[in-house]
Length: 496
Image 1 (spheres, rainbow, N blue to C red):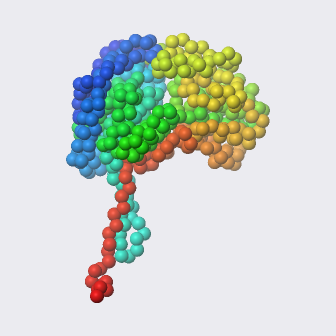
Image 2 (tube, rainbow, N blue to C red):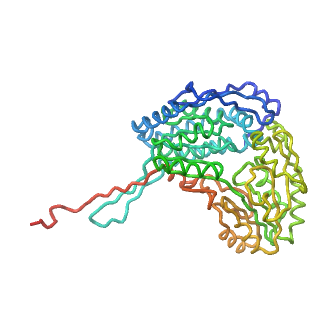
Image 3 (tube, rainbow, N blue to C red):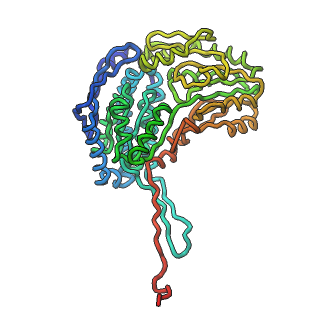
């Protein structure tokens, strides 16, 4: 685990940073003619820097350069081991610059520096490295075509891919997209969230330094309507991979249908349950997982535990242990490594989260600026806190009478991204895991699996593919069949 610096050292490092201020196009920072967007520190409200965004002309230029790089084979036709070596070099550069990147990420997103240093940066580097190492280890297939033919089933890079990123995990979600996309051989255009563009720009700069050819990885900061929609509708982009809200995800399906029917992969919202059966053991450990799942990253996490569905026999004891565990989670300046919780992303999102803060909280419910204290409510299934995705540090507790009722209640949602089940009975736990309608189900723990396991959702939580694992490469590839006739012409009957 990476060693943490002091609060003063992180503040000093923040004061020394040099911030990117332009989009990254065709291998360099490019002065564009779009609107100016201001990047704010959500913990203080102060301006970090301003970034010039891409105009329609600049977007077309980026797509043109991406297509040119792909058609010329600057990246996709390199030997797989060459692409691997370049991405490994990028990982080394990321490691060398990880303190700078961690502070930059904390400043613009409000994330606690301890998470940026100990989770986000290591996982970002590991993700890109994992996909890089996979480049020359994925084999294609032959089909059972009989003695007179040979069928070859091969993957080919899909072409120009657009990656639309959220603001909650700027670096990690960037790695989830560009890792498999670059490994597959695609040209990639990244549209980071307008609130968190700095780290994506810096990574693109480091990628060019590592040897990624010009036009292969480009970053276009800007708003959804100004840049995201243009990429979604562009007829020379072959696919879009999007992580964000379900509402915005629907728009990319619309953009695709109204343009060139580009492939769309969506990882969207969640209202994720943690189900605790009456036979759950070690409630101290259960409480630790619940607190981490509900409040990590201020609840700004698509797989956050937002519904605790617990059997009446153990609810009181579990709630007591949750409250004890929660006392250790301090909220404050994101650059202070003593704090587990930082600021929500911006005032607009804070206003949304604040709309769920009503009287009667078991704990929390306070808001100051963009800081919201961890909050717990006991509620009912029909309450909007238990139905709607809040994307903030608010946990709803629902009491059930039976384990069967718990599973039924867990599935009563339009989402299906992740779920957790806690039970000491292995058979009950495995049966519950099968019955829960979610893309990832953890047993006696909270989590999302790891880089080797596919991540995505059922129902309105996902569409079209999965991130992570070998499965992530599929969304950036086309599958081609090559059929070779091996029949000896000399042995065929002549047509009279």
